[in-house]
Length: 193
Length: 312
Image (cartoon, rainbow over the protein chains, first blue to last red):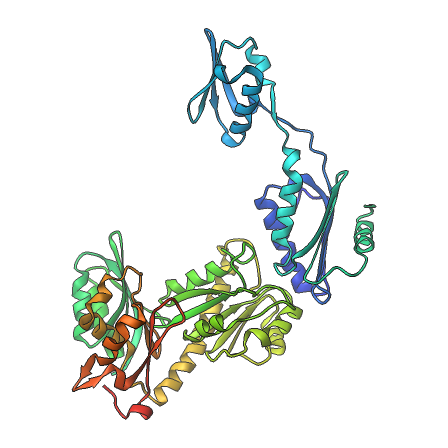
């Protein structure tokens, strides 16, 4: 976890802690989330059955623009876009429909989009924002922590706000004061929730 | 004549020579896989004739290797079918034992995960008991393993090998009631087993399974079976042609003391029981033909000599 500034797994069982460190690393790497986490502290107590993950997120300022996923080829009366990354294609089409109307947007095949009679220049078209990856970040993080936490811990409480997050899961009803536990784990990283 | 499990690997060209030879020597081909230009035969051959098979298969570039798990059906008990346990490590282990000849089935528990909430229902228990051995893939915490094992072992009659993250000594200390085999250092992980140390762990699991099964084989040898399951397999294939139409990869699965016949019980059980083996002795005389809890298959449990007074 080279990209993460602080990463600790706290557990009364050292072997379990070692395994969970590995699992966390693998899952976050698989979900491409390592670069968005700045600090992460995980606490697991199998005796009480509680899993706590608290952390700080890096601010995500990047947005995806048309130029990032397509090459634009201006021609007489039309612009041909050759798609290099399909991930945001659907969202791009939606933006185009809103901007130019459906009658001016055509997709003859999977990797080609043609815009007819648009006033915009190629440069302007390239700069149109089509997606904000930060919007789905919280959803991705919750899914990743569900994979990391022990499977039987099905009662969950998640909080994601102002670049900080906490994820608590347990097998039993969370009777103790969870906020206090979360605060204590944040304090270990030198942060407040 | 002592039959030993081996695997033959070679080209498809003239491989029938090897099959004929094995059958002429009194051996049995348990499984045959044709993969493009390659043939893999899992078979039982007479111990004294292994060298002869090696010699005859040498000109056609065939290779004979020991496969102690051929003719065994193993239950890989995974705590659930969720992403937490699949495909790693459950599938990795199931696939690894398959490569060396075992027929492995993954048994996933409906309420396997967790500590307090864990449970084993009667269907799961019966399905596990239909195998030769069960490999329990446990998690990373000794507290959970200690708490869960008595529940998960309730009613299990087959030998069990427990795998978990704590080391072997810890597993031996915490697993109650004690089981036949332990492999430490294999808990829940979420990466493919491809590094050398991870493959060593898989080899350790195989070694432990082999050790436990050898012990079971020794016990079976003390009171031999009335008929060898591999021989029974060949007979069923000859006498009940419907088995040839079954599309399952192993329509007849050989076990150490029986056979799983993948035909509907209600339709074929009476026919199976009436099937003559030799000198008027029918299958019903020397084996128990029972419905399997796995789909509507038939489970043939061969009775030992002490119960039938017959060895064919």
